[in-house]
Length: 428
Ligand code: PLP
Image 1 (spheres, helix red, strand yellow):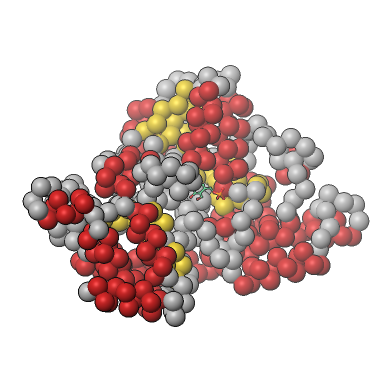
Image 2: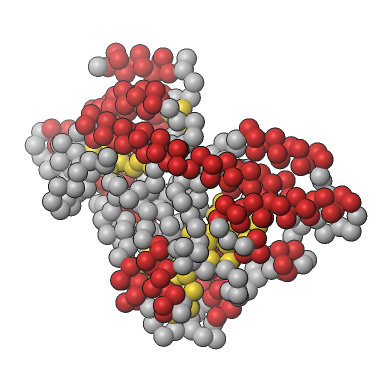
């Protein structure tokens, strides 16, 4: 087995690298890169200028907005370009809070949101707003009734993500949106991981505000979107010129708006095919990992999850060391620790779904994309068990377990769900 490990590691240098971190970012499609280059070269004008170059740029911007609106089944005037998903989340949450503070100062969100949402909420708390952080269940699902119960007379905004970026769970946004609408409370949803992966139609979801990001759907980094339902008023965060209907100052990034429209149109055209294809690859991966690696758990919901997301905990080892070894084997993946900070704290999402810290530490996120193949999955299913086995051989915890001094938290046969109620079943 040891020889096989060394051999596989050596061999990996001769094979093309495998990118399994599409939730972190994606590589722009060639057609998208061409659209950017063409726009930068041929249409560099400022859309606010009153001459031909400006008019051409303004038209490209308007066309891109219209294409994006058509993909989302909304009106072009409901689409606002931003710099990224983080800006869209900040704008939606702080902008709504500032615009509505005379009506109330209470906001509701969940414990598993992205830091763009959580830190916006924390910033508002410092300014005297009151925030309720709702708990999710052990698979990352939020019971919509909890939202209904949490709404108070002074509640001004509910923000619940459509799909979680770490564990991939898809939340019941439509039901939550309906509850908010009935209660007359604004509803924002972070749709950054959902757009391009599953159908996202803000009006059907009863969302008033939705955030999106270009680089998660094969467009470049540096462009995002905010959907704002017609008639919804939020404060601006970026003061300046009259761009984006006087609501977000700053000369528009026309080339990246064109890129995002192109990437979104292409994702929509492929959506059904890709979501089925990636779901099949994802389930092949999940089944293979649980069957081949003892004491392994799938994190997140087994079925209500993004087509491209698999997140595992391997008992007795650390996620960072798995990543380092996998990198040497030629794979780019992500761990369950706080990737955005230098600390090695386990992720707030894994802790919020009830994982003990020692299990959360041994977590690995594998996210697939349009370039993922069955051959890559099958190769990974050979390499990952070798990596986990090698790390367990080096682990004092595993040694204690082998000597009978430690009870495992995850059963040897593995688990799709630590709290299995009835026969939960394999994902189909
Ligand atoms: N929201 C979610 C759910 C995300 O996954 C991310 C990025 O990982 C963001 C927001 C932030 O998006 P951006 O990187 O475009 O700022």
